[in-house]
Amino acid sequence: MFNNLRQKFIIMTMTAVLTVLSIIIGAMNLVNYHTVVRNADQLLHILSENEGEFPSLQMQVPGSDGSDGGISGTESRSGLQDAGVQPFRGSPESSETPGNSGNPGSAEGSADSGGTKNIEALFADLYRDPDEQISAETRFESRYFITVFDTEGKCDFINLDNIAAVDEETALKYAKKVYHSGKTSGFVCFYRYLLEVKEDGRTMVLFLDCNRSLNSFHSFLKSSIIVASLGFFSIMILIIIFSRRIVRPMQESYDKQKRFITDAGHELKTPLTIIDADISVLELDTGPNEWIEDVRTQTSRLAQLTNDLIFLSKMDEDQAHLDMIEFPISDILSECAQSFRSRAIMEKKSFSSDIEPMLEYRGDQKSLRQLFSILLDNALKYSPEGGSISLSLKKQPKGIELKLCNTCENISRDNMEHLFDRFYRTDESRNSSTGGYGLGLSIARAVVMSHRGKITASAPKPDELLITVTLPDHPHK
Image (cartoon, rainbow, N blue to C red):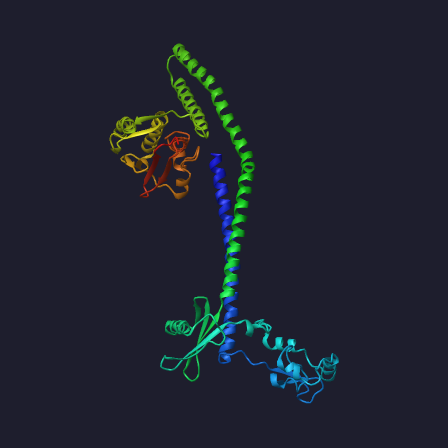
């Protein structure tokens, strides 16, 4: 029993861990993918707003408005020298710029006279939005191509100047696919596209190569899955190791409880036997009377209760001592049903059975016979006068199925869930004359579980109780 409890604990714990890890990994990769898409869309919108080109390099330079050191005017790359700003290092202009022929102080003099900003900083300021964080190198790193469709849907312009991996045929194929899809953005292969209709009616479709970004995303996805898997299995190993220590105190307490019940049961058997013998001797001296008969009845009930508790304690053991033999289960059930049929007639209740003949089963014949008797006795005991009991036994692909249905008083869902608990009875039965201690169905469940089977209770109708027992083939394995 505790092995099953330990297995359930491990399964539930690892399910929770797997759920949490899946949510974390999924959220991280979702954010990562969203970042890739957002950055690509930002670049595409910039290209779209500038007719398929990145904005030309324009900078604010000091003194253009006549103010001291202010930055208000704009100059293109050709006007940088006039503004006192040196061109890019290594560019052709750098060798022809006056005052820059190897004089290291020329840059300082220029900076001192005009307070000119560094060219790299100005370039970065132009292309770096505080929210978008697009670097100055983006225009040189981005690979893209452009197609334009006229108002009639014919592609009349293709620009492949900024990409080498796509030829004109492939570009036209991708463009037509996007144009006819009706979507304004998405992915074609690893190209992010943006479709935009211009004011003159033409349709521009821009494609941005996201291969490197998507490869990084896929690498991160694989890495996160591998790390999460390693973490999952590491946690599972630790849970398996520590679950033994977690369950051990409960198992020791339960073993002590079972040992107490077994020892107490055996100790009670001796005085009960003596009391029963003394009652018989006393009856010989005084003759039969109602008090002696009442004592004998209660002694018999107490002895039966003791035997039931000892039986339950033994059946709860992981390795119950069962004598597994092959026997005709159809004949055993028919024999038990016949003995209860007469009782049903006496109590004015209808009894029907549908037992498939010649069924063989390998199990403990004694405990299964007790199972049948308990279920039939319970059905007759709690069915009202004029009620009905139906019994069936059928061969199933993976075992044998027993069904026992009887009419009864309405059983609530809460009561249904506790029918197989020890000493549990519904409130109505506690105040009735049915007797019993609420151990019958607990013993039935113990017998079924010892055969690796399954027993359930359901209510097909509000006034019916259906007990279903499934006994698998080869329960000893």
